[in-house]
Image (cartoon, rainbow, N blue to C red; front, side, top):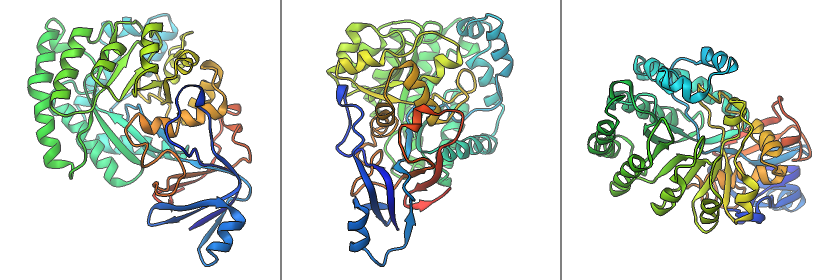
Length: 415
C-alpha cells in the first residue's frame, strides 16, 4: 500500500532523541511512504513515490498529518474491578498513601484481581486495549502487579501473552510482583521480598521459556517508594532479576526521593519511571546514561498534585525523556496518549514536537523497541497514524477529542 499526499509526514528519523535534540520530527511536506509485508520499504515525496510505484494500491492522506503510532511504555492494563470510591475519598482529603495504609489503593485491586479468572482478565483488558488503539496507541508495555502472589501474578502474565496474540495491539509484558506488600505479609515484608526472589522470579523464568514462544524475557519492575518497597528491598529484587537475565525497570521518586534512580542506573535499568521528586544529582546521572526517563503526567493530574516530572531539567542534562500514560485503576484511568501529550505541553513545558517524539521514538526506547518501531523509516514495522488535522501542533493544542482518523498496524488498516 502506498500512503500519499500527507500534508506533514512525521518520520522522526534518526534514532533516539536526547536532551535539547528532542523534537526533531523529520517532516516531509506532501510526503508518502510504501508498505510491503508489514514493513516500510520507501519514504519520500508524493510525486516521487507515485511515479516510482504506479501500480500500488493507494491510500490518500488528503493533506493530513501522517505519523508513527504512539508507544505507551508504562501501563497497568490487566486488573479487575475499579476504585471509583477511592477517587471520592481523595476528593474528601485522603492522600494516596493514607488510602493504601488503610487497605485500599493497590490492595483493593489485588483482592478483585485475585478473584478473577484469566478469561475475565483478558476480556476486561481487551476492551481497554481497543480504546487505546482507537486513540492511536499501537504498542504498549503492560505490567502484572495486582496479584502479589504467584498464581495470581502468573494469571496476569498469561493474560498479557493472550492479549498480544489477539493482535489488538502489540504488548510487551512486565512482571511487577513488587508493586506493594500484600496484606498477608504486612508484618513480614522481608519474607515477601524473599518469596519474590527465591520462588517467583526463578519460576517466572522457567514458565516464560516454556510458554512465550522464544520471546525475550519480560521486564521486571519494582515500586521503590515509602509504603511500598525500601531501597534495600528494591535492590535485592532487581539484582536477583538481573542475575536471572531479566531486563529491569523501576517506579521511583513518585512521592519521595529514596535514591531509586541512582540504584537503577547502577544496575543498568532500561527505564526509570515517574521521577517527580528526583534530585538534581540523579538528573545529572540520567543525562550521562542510556536509561530512559519516563514521565507519567496523568498520575499527578489524576491525584490533583501540583508537581510533575522536571522534564526541562532532564533535557538540560541531556537525558532521554519519554512519555507514558500509567493507565491504571487507581490514579490514571486514561490510556489516551493524545491527552498525555496535552498534559506534557502544559505541565512539563514541552513543545508539541518534543512531546510527540517522547511518545513515539523515545517511548519505543523505553521498551527496547526503538530499532523496530517509533519512527517511519525504511525497514521499520509499519505502525502508522493518519490524523484528522493538517498540522501536528493540534496534538497538545487540542484535548478531549480524538484526532486519530486511521490506525495502521503492521501495514494493515485496523481502524
